[in-house]
Image (cartoon, rainbow, N blue to C red; front, side, top):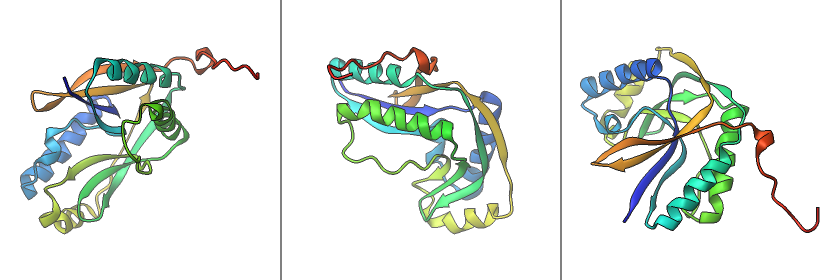
Length: 188
């Protein structure tokens, strides 16, 4: 048994439809299709392979602990890129998303699922992997275009890779941070 999971934010369907229109435009105009294999999302924790039921239980328990969070508003604004390999919508850094990502990473750290986690740079990928030959053309096509959408965030999602696609698997609705169980210590 081996399952691949992704922890992410998913915008509401109305925004996903706008994003998919952009992704389809890029795919059709520039013949790049890799990003269409994934849902429109903001990665909070990179994809991880879990190979035992025990690890899966610990993974989901840690995410349950990380769901004690305060709702926030997420803004997607304009286009940006990681040179030569990824074109994306900027997900504005705000206290809410930065705290959520940190909380998820902190609760999952003891499981040692990934060697070294990269610095969190929230974004929503529009095209990647197969864009290198047309990267500069995509940048040029979008250099003067503007985009802005915002949405309330009161949960995060886990997607599971099955049947060669990412499928929604579980949603973690935020719980009041004040109800989070305190860690007991002999020295408190």
